[in-house]
Image (cartoon, rainbow, N blue to C red; front, side, top):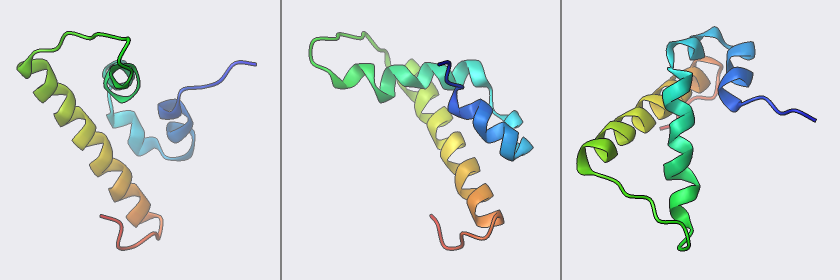
Length: 76
């Protein structure tokens, strides 16, 4: 069974998600999953961390905006 990435699933339901860069978003996985495990060492630099932090904020803001638009009020 092949699974779609969540970004594509979101686009199927709300085209606003097309505004996000799917290539960059897929790189967030490094910070969301791989960096959590002590046997994995990932070298980072402050500029890269700032870039991905900004991208994570952008994704979060869009998700909250769209949830509020769809009637899920007071999500912050």
